[in-house]
Image 1: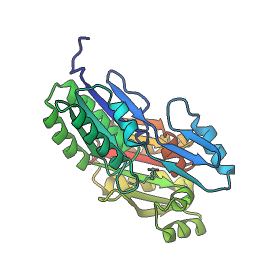
Image 2 (image 1 turned 45 degrees about the vertical axis):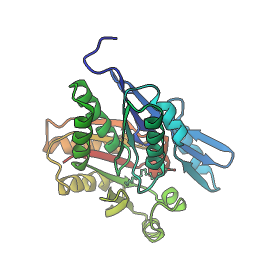
Image 3 (image 1 turned 135 degrees about the vertical axis):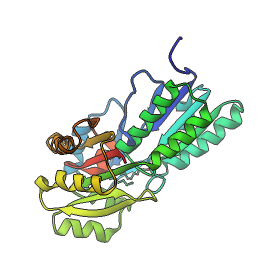
Image 4 (image 1 turned 90 degrees about the vertical axis):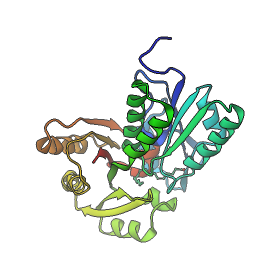
Length: 282
Ligand code: X90
């Protein structure tokens, strides 16, 4: 195959990155799973996210999630010479750890191949930005090590903010301090927050009522140094809020590259109906 880039590479990202496929790139998404009683939702291209969200809102039992196994990662690496693997934050998931074990196995099996695992310390749209950057640099035919260091540097300059209508699923899985969840619930506030430097959930503000959310998110973006770079907005059944945020950003930065996508199943399970995740360059 003739191409403008090295065809012996592969970008592998877990499904918390919300990408099913990537145009003109050798890409594979490795699904996480959502477990609720006897139902198992696999976060792949076949899943109906809205159906899952509906199911979860009427499901009363305990539910949980599971990250890919090391074996599933090795399988996804396939037979690529250069593997760029992108995972959800190690601060909230075992996905990075599993991918690291897979990378070790891969290198032992094929000593001449190269694998790097990026711990994005984030989720959803910030992961998407990282994957897009890898693709861009691979297409420039830069060497593996150079791409790795440039992408690590890039990831330090990207950020994630989010708004959550409910912290129920985060709290029941121990991914957020119980006190924070309780407070947001009692006051029926939309919690606005960001990914901390350690890759955990850090509340930064609140919005009383849906109408206030886009404004509060824009405030956070600017506060964190947004200045017209790329923005990726992923929403859980809330296109109107995503559009409103996009318009608000465009008013300040008319040339900004902003894309809106539906969140996948894993992010939708945790962000819950109405939630929004915003990844951006600073
Ligand atoms: O390994 C697993 O089972 C997956 C656990 C993932 C837990 C958190 C997912 C968060 C998804 C919700 C808000 C964003 C917070 C991100 C902070 C870094 C999105």
